[in-house]
Image (cartoon, rainbow, N blue to C red):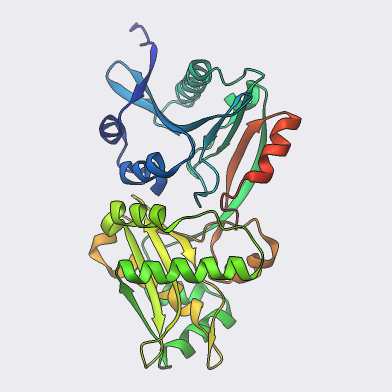
Length: 340
């Protein structure tokens, strides 16, 4: 009988992190280029944990540690950066459920111990990836656990006509009317990303809502991700900007990240046409042959769910893990992570 190898947890560099990432099963913000932008612009220090059995990576977790006047925060994702989920990646080498659970438990315990995360002066908050299905080790360590949701449109083994037919009647009508109009939707460069950013910022200001993002951060994120970030822009027949979204592409999903301010043009719902162009790209562009889903980034805001539900996406859970304390309730007021 072979002896089970002991878990080893290390703090990694970004290149080491990239080497340890699996080929799929994680969020776009786990990519080294995205983490590099976080490292540059986050209020705190990025710590990259890797769990190993022998030389085999079995767990990864990025944490941003921020020292306060009293105590510190340990966040994944950090607040105010429009990152909907980050948290742990666990990739056991055994298909057996018992061994998978053991690896998850050992990795979580080792990272929490390394960080001293259960100390009275540490506030912890994690939002897990969709693919992380077992948050119990955090609950066993006396952290609060709650469930949140996002809509994910399944684009595996299908075609545009079949996807369109799955949409609600009103959404199909909006898309067809948009395609018959003078509105064009195209993929544009960094200047268009800036237009989407400024339009979004203005909308937040007009609604007296905080908007913590900076253009420098958005620029560095988008340029770092390169072909994994695209600005989809709708223009009228004179070339004027109507609406647009910035979409990020992970290893197996596209993410509606920024933009999409409500926009009508001659009675046409322009954003429906923009989202449809994204879906068409996922289904037809060879660059995205491994992308099989479109994540609409949140199903937690009641007023937005009626519209997002028209895309016939699956309601997929993820988890919020946080310190069980009155101090965390106060700290949460500063959180602006996406829960749309």
